[in-house]
Image (cartoon, rainbow, N blue to C red; front, side, top):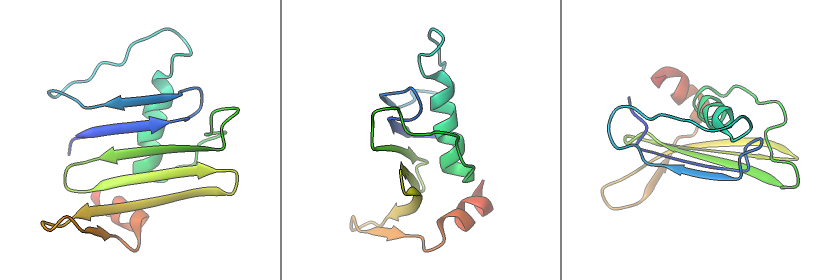
Amino acid sequence: MKIIKLVSRNIKNLKAIEITPDGNIVTLSGKNGAGKSAILDSIFSALTGKRLKDPVRHGESRADVEVDMGEFIVRKRWTEKGEAIQVYTTNADGKKQIYSSPQTFLDNVI
């Protein structure tokens, strides 16, 4: 299983990042507080359902992550009201097939 594309916005101290890996290894580097852990936390929370402590960047109203796994895409959103997750695939005709129990699907796949 491989991440094809990652987009995270307003997760912890991270403003926005888009990563499209080219190969099998991605190196995250940067100074302390640059957002390396926030990137990993956003992936981990989206795929496992684990809750993050204070996930929304201070001053923002929501945080989002989208993890494209090729066979399926996971979207997770955090707001003041809580969090929501969506897992879907795109059919050959371009229509979304949304899984009715996204975390159960992820638990079985991951």
